[in-house]
Amino acid sequence: MPLNLTTYSKITWCPGCPNSQILVAFRQAIQELVDQNKLKPENLVAFAGIGCHGKITDYLNTNSFTSLHGRLIPAMTGAKCANPELTCIGFSGDGDSYSEGLEHLIHAARRNSDIKVFIHDNQLFALTTGQASSRSPLGFKSKTTPLGSIEPPFNPLLTLLSAGASFVARTYAGDLKGTKRIMEAAISHKGFAFVDIIQPCITFFDTRDYFKDRIYWIDENLPKNDLNKAMALVNGGDEKVPLGIFYEVERPTFEDQLAKI
Ligand code: SF4
Image 1 (cartoon, rainbow, N blue to C red):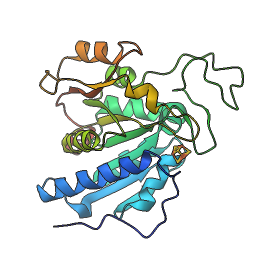
Image 2: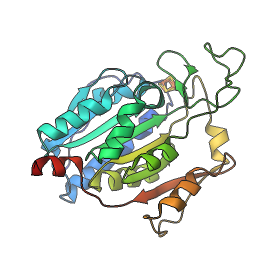
Image 3: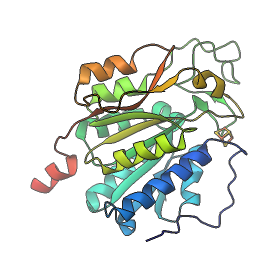
């Protein structure tokens, strides 16, 4: 059944912004999952936080909810607890979830809440015109760091693996096919699925050339249940940036435990 996932809202992302590719990949992933009877459109709820990424729910003809800054995860986990039939998929940014609301992300991973989180990681606060975030590299110059950032950047994948996330992956927004594949796998996973999406902000921090020379896809057939190997992969330095599903295991979800009380 072809879905109409578009809306009448005018897209106001900067022309060429990779957020548009994330939107297209997501629409395609949803269509495919619905066609395969793995997802009921009426049960789908798209959540967003605050930031450039947050406009995505305006462009998706689905149930949706826009949360406060940094408070995406509580809205998602609340909805999922109230109605476990829902497929709760959240979009957030590195400013929104790695800088403002990091604690929620860590605890949702620890509990294995059955929600899927896609982070548009552009390494700054883009909507407010390019201030440094916890993901900005050392030396990054911005309005808030005019002499260059003196803080090492946060490693979200390593943190989420340590916190207990049962699905951890990374993709690159410019690779539409790869992003769609990772999104489908994340949405199909039962438990907390976390995907960092490298999304260069072409207006305030254009990293496309930087990543073009560094990204590579890991072998899809590698075992996905080896936590130490996953940690080593995502902590291997800046020279090469692996993409793919680093870790995937099954364990009881928070909602399943809650239903037994
Ligand atoms: Fe995209 Fe950056 Fe423009 Fe925001 S400011 S829409 S992230 S290019």
